[in-house]
Image (cartoon, rainbow, N blue to C red):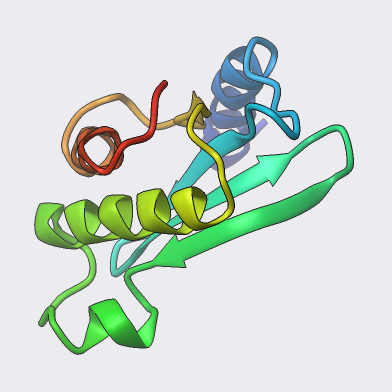
Length: 122
């Protein structure tokens, strides 16, 4: 097997390790994070119905006009605040944080801390 294929297998294995314990419901949806090199995205997902309840990203017009670059900690904080506001508008207070295969530091930690400051309970 090639090195690239082995890296992908290890990444999926790490992701499944986290997803095995984190399950979203209507009462407590899963707050999942996707991080690319230029942007960061967050979604509130109800796994029992298989639908997205709310989403926020550094690519959205509200955040994009206030930031010069979407792939840094400042953008992650803005996305965290935006997802917390969207969740409160839907009446959601508790979430299950799904970091995926990312380590809990840097942009992922900044997004989670901003969502907590916005009123979400993990």
